[in-house]
Length: 215
Image (cartoon, rainbow, N blue to C red):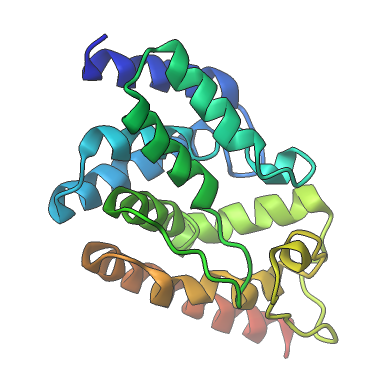
């Protein structure tokens, strides 16, 4: 099977799996991440087959929806690519992306091993920023049943992935615990440049939010 066919088959599989998901981790999130990954990857000189497959499969079985099990996503991605008879070396690089992509807490390092991993991680983080990032954050907070805002509850800079996974902080606190940190965590020069405007928009949103809240 040629590369174009592998990508198209994977698109169809991921869309069928994630379409209609309501927390912001749906097919359209995948498509936005794919588009940004292609944009960043081409500018940074990455292997575009690995970038596209990593972007498509990065949320195929997110730990957040599988009882916190971090092994499900990499396993599902590996099984799918093996079905398509993708080269083992390509599979290994894609699986590493799926395994390592997630933010795991403010004080937890999440380094990517390859340029392709850095590209996909940047593209995924871009979709957690700006207007879409704000919308996704409130969608997921509603799914989790988290409070919108509680002025008496301070943000927590988590030191471990377990603490981050088990956090039940407010949705507004999530901006400080993750979203506002992402601009400085971008891996590539292209990702850093794209993050600037989205970061500023979130700061403006929070200013307006507090003005209306009365804090």
